[in-house]
Length: 142
Image (cartoon, rainbow, N blue to C red):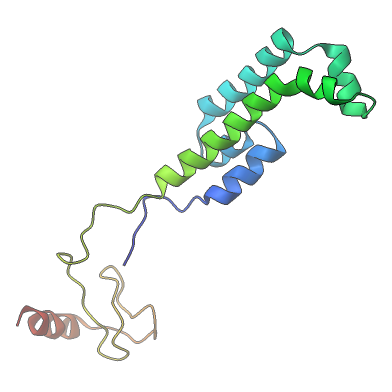
């Protein structure tokens, strides 16, 4: 069984980061990082992007030259998207549980692996008594 440390989906973090800078990081609950990327996009826009060229690019009146002027902003947005993806992906790294050494007890009814925290089989919903767990544990030891 492959367990992960987070259920956050990298593709959703990317989609949200595409919609708005920092939104993918908010989804990942990285508040400071989201604010950092948002601040970086504002700073880059203020320092490197000509406002008239940006207006021409947004309205569609500009050409390739206006796209080049807006490129620093798109670079920051692209790096923010990449960062959100890598962050979400790194959180989904499988945990250090070794499946060979972990105790796995099969369900006496359906044979699938049981979750040790539940008192029933999550697959067939049959109740599992402590006597069933003890008996199955002894069979696995042999």
